[in-house]
Amino acid sequence: MQLKKEEREASPALWARVMIPAVCLILGFGITLQIRSVRHAQSASSGADLTRAEELQKQLSAQKSRNDELANEISGLQKKLAGSSAAGAQLTQAEMMAGLVDVRGPGLTVTMRDSTAPPQPGQSASAFVIHDSDILNVLNELRDAGAEALSINDERILATSEVRCAGNTLSTNNNRYSAPFVIRAVGDKDKLRAALLMKGGVADVLSQWGIVVDAVPGDNILVKAYAGIPDYKYAKAAEGGS
Image (cartoon, helix red, strand yellow):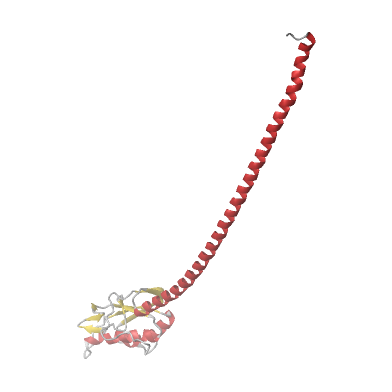
């Protein structure tokens, strides 16, 4: 059956009136679903962010506790280091006193030379050369004046060092040397020199025989360490402090 002309002309308008609301309804439903989806995603994202923030806070707290532990460890190690430094300083001091290390400081360089004057008739030639007793007198004067380290021809003088004549040479630390003899002393250079060159002192007496005692003060005197190994056959460390 064919539609009348008016009905045919009215059909497109009717179709439009029916379809437009339907399309709007579909679009509205889609938009609603989209909004809900976005809100759900935002909610999930917010929850994830919150969980992440809580996790980071826990990690921060744990790291802070670890830092506190490390700070305590460092403090303890610093205290131990301070104690070991003090012990190290005491050890160095003991090594210096024992002559086991090189030392530098103000002091005196003393050079002793045999006399070049010929002996007169009736005089013994031995009086014009240096003897072990002469060197010992010089060493004792320097010790009394406060010398903290001594050497003869770079042989460190220890409590066990021998200083004795062996023919026309001098033996010290089992090594032999001929004149001139160079004695180095670390200490107050002015006191050392005054003690050695005082009137009537050892240098004054030796000068009467033409023996030269030349004392030169310095600010950087080197006294070398004992070259050997100290050997104590009888002395032992006492236990218990008595």
